[in-house]
Length: 212
Image 1 (spheres, rainbow, N blue to C red):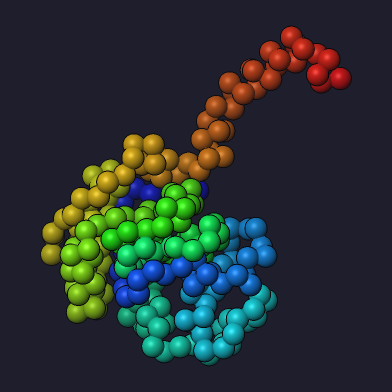
Image 2 (cartoon, rainbow, N blue to C red):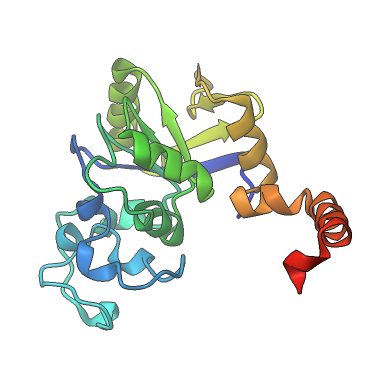
């Protein structure tokens, strides 16, 4: 998992509340269990004018010019601004996979659905909860200023605007440690590989019949 320390990234405003995981990555794309390749189908039903299916050449599909991700000024955005209850719906882990594969490293919203919120941390995406009035301000400034970038400092737990205004956010110590060091659950387990091997060797010596 890619570590998250500090990020200065272009912000993209998705001005919709209650965005569910089927909107983030529609169900027909859930056949793959790989974590990569979902970016081109992020927000597929809003992003394209036709119906998407796996295996299609997305470069030849008609884009919806009114959808924010298709606007030239937001190309390469790494911070997604969203509204309340972002990531509601089913528990598919493909949703943060699609966001990360597209290039988003953080999502800022007033609130998130719990399962999606947890899945983000497991996949290197930092979900940040800020008060609704602060999120409103960020939306206004992003729309008003082309090239609007936010700086996110995980160690300091701050989001800083181009004008220098900073907002603090909460994160548990465990999640912060994992994200800062790029450790998913497998990575955390592998940190104890020597102890695991020692335990297995001891168990084999004490109960060899289990390994016959």
